[in-house]
Image (cartoon, rainbow, N blue to C red):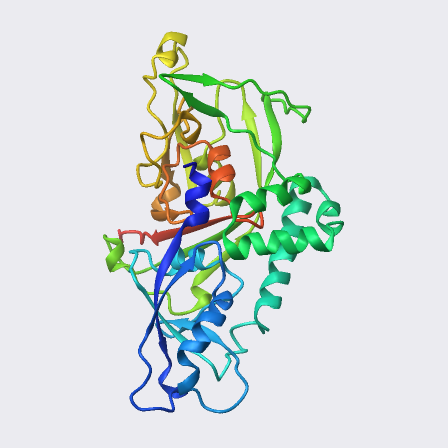
Length: 368
């Protein structure tokens, strides 16, 4: 099974409680255990949640929202991203509270159920298309049937149906840099009509990225000791495309992308063996540059894995101002050396954005 299929089949077990202020019966209804698709959105669970708690609700108009440890959850952020962001040390099942009254309009924008989620998704898709192609004509010109099929494929977690419609949008911008075939690592040839700068780098495209950064000022060593995120004000939300540059003999890595997104935090020291022989490459002496935590079967087909014949990157921190404690994408904590093309092609969300969660521990300077 290819990595993208794993992503689309990914789900988070939820343990949902009804908030005590909404309970009108004794005893209160039991919690609901449910699997929430990673690529889905919390309001899409309402048709399953409401029947479970409906008999205990007070009269009135439902305005459904969820919270985690008292923090209202933003409904337009994919469920998997919320989990990755708010649970640095994953907790399963994820304990959430559902509310049917008292919508926190000072924190959350209004949500009218599935329709609101759908239009938020389509607007994000338009934004991604504009970043990739310079216009969003293909999305704007989608037929109603294609738009409906695309949305239903996301609702149902049907990757094959999604591919059939999304191919018409022509939003695939990156070809995988490296691929493992049997016992060899061969570099695919790639031609590009893009502009080349003075350093010999070729720009191959822009990748839509949503970056969520939590900067912790408290001192902690283990993720389970990390401070709780109790306010959205503690999250820096960066909506910035990554321009992918290619240089002959090197691949553009996830580390390069992170450096472009957070230049004030990261600098890099490169270690590259300019004399890597063809024999070494063919013998596969360069180990794959993806983490074992990427949920892929190491015994899978060659097409499912990405090889590493790229510049090794060691992250450093400017003036020792911050320490990278966690970088998580789709529940995976990939190595910075992984080719960015593999990350984009396998871990992007259906609206063609790559969502990256970053935890930084701010390092306080020692007094002199």
